[in-house]
Length: 87
Image (cartoon, rainbow, N blue to C red; front, top):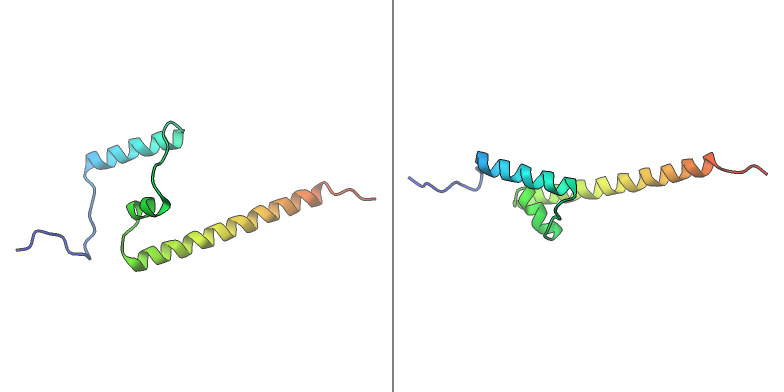
């Protein structure tokens, strides 16, 4: 019997690990602590290290940033139109 998990199996966190992660997340969101690491290191900790999942996460990140920039532009356009002087 092989006791090592196969690549297709997902690993689960134990209760103390989850609790430590929640404490760290609360400290980061409260501004008491900074997140250290490059985006690649942080992404690999949150998502699977499998290439296809990393690819789709990257595509979703690009899509999210694009939609955010378009929304920001539209808000600026709406504010410009709101305060436009007629003359």
